[in-house]
Length: 320
Ligand code: SF4
Ligand code: SF4
Image 1 (cartoon, rainbow, N blue to C red):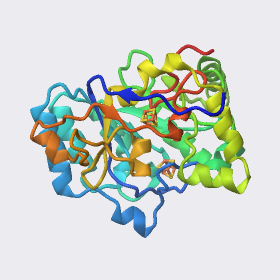
Image 2 (image 1 turned 90 degrees about the vertical axis):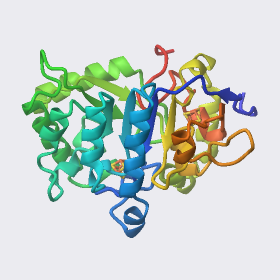
Image 3 (image 1 turned 30 degrees about the horizontal axis):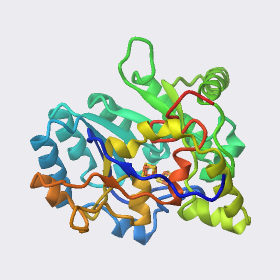
Image 4 (image 1 turned 120 degrees about the horizontal axis):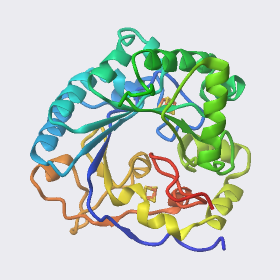
């Protein structure tokens, strides 16, 4: 089953704008598909205040965009992050943040839990295992303990607490070249261990398949496992996932103003194209001129359709 191309896809409509604010991050995880880090390139690839203004204007003019999904890097490290969240909340948009927990320990960020709560931000926090050693292996020494501290800080102001609307989701991705286990069973294990060992609560666990791009691809190449991983993804192609792929109802904006079909295409520099074959930028959206429905697909897309499927919101279908 290995030798076939990914099927063509088209966008239905979009209600979510995922915005990759920039590559700057306080961590440099082994699996990071954005190749984020605290380095100079992270500082350079970061959104300007002018782009933030355009995003706020876009939300204001388009009620059909109901959700703003902020990612990076660590989006909180952009100096315009907080005003973007506050403006979006004022416009009654749902705001999601991909929050790495350890950023709470960076200078000037200790009040982030309260800021998130004040703006009813839904959080997605990476914790690729409930075992300290495994998390530190993938995300860096000391990250597990700092992540637990961050989760406790969020719990203490109401996140994932009974009778609270504040949603705190954890994100699992495999440590190596295999597919995620069944999402619900893994969530049960996380819930039990984190409660018993660390007195930590969370709302839901989402499982994400590692994309064979950038750092994870380099890891596979070093281990001589890239071909076998691609075969694994292809052999587990599940056509039932196609309807729910996130690229069908969301688009991604990059820090330089260009638009993409998803965050993976964004980091691969595989642009969204208009009917004339030109690249689409945020100014086209502001002018109400998005005439692109065809989604740019490539071999990495097989990571989204393997097994139960994978998206920024986790598995796409019931476990198979
Ligand atoms: S915290 Fe997230 S964005 Fe930062 S390096 Fe790790 S995976 Fe990449
Ligand atoms: S990587 Fe996944 S979300 Fe992105 S275009 Fe391919 S199938 Fe869609």
